[in-house]
Length: 144
Ligand code: DQA
Image 1 (cartoon, rainbow, N blue to C red):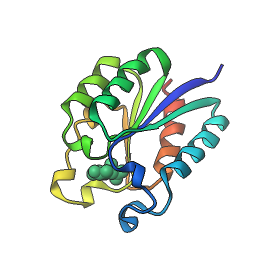
Image 2: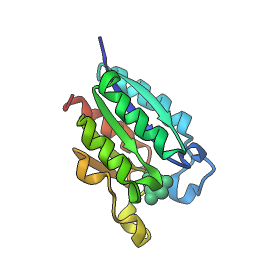
Image 3: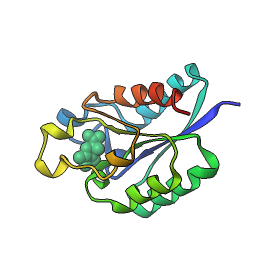
Image 4: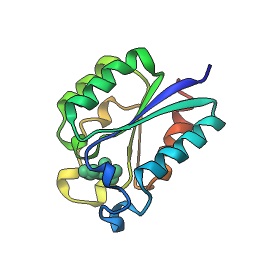
């Protein structure tokens, strides 16, 4: 049976397509989800693709991944820069984890330069737009 990768998206990523297209592009989150499903099939993986605007919900999903997933791909959105809770949850479940950002957070405002998630991720992909999710799937296939 194909292993499941939990792909989590944090706050405001539900607005992709219309949100600051000059920064985040014009693909919607649904488009990204479909492309992830298609790419996962070629890697013999299945994906569970989710988005939440709520930190606690993301933390609960990370905790549940212990039972339901072989690895986690996460774009924590703004919570990257604030959430010790997401850091702790990822550390606790200790599954292979790749952090993704659509934009290159290091080219942007100083408050985006630090991520609480990066120290608990196996790898970080940023600045490559939606393609970053597909690269993360390819990478995590080798880790799970
Ligand atoms: C983001 C970068 C974050 O700084 C921002 O808060 C987001 C999206 C990205 O994918 O580039 O919501 O994670």
